[in-house]
Image (cartoon, rainbow, N blue to C red; front, side, top):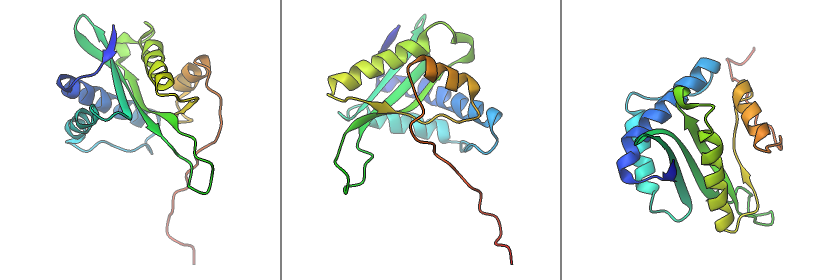
Length: 160
């Protein structure tokens, strides 16, 4: 079952976020690590944003237990010298490993994209680690296409 999140879901969502971070770390050690209190902070921050009209969180439940979530926000990512165009940003999505391949991810995305449409938005964006082949396949199946590539370079000591 997919439903909007409520404040009582904060601990479960924080736990899922911690699994998401660990999953990214397992794929690529360069991905950011969670702080020891990261899950609690994430859950509290998310709970504080539930009343924000520009934020939406949905959870996937199995037998009353939260097994997945998606976080979306209405944003305008264009600097002010460009014509402004609000869009959706899917900030986070995660489904527990034991609950994957049951349609929860698709249902979470569908609920969020329906909400984005209700907000009058015409598009949404997200980030995907290029090293996460499962996520890339999922997003391609959901209609995603590469649009821009976010790149990164490590800054070591300057050569003399």
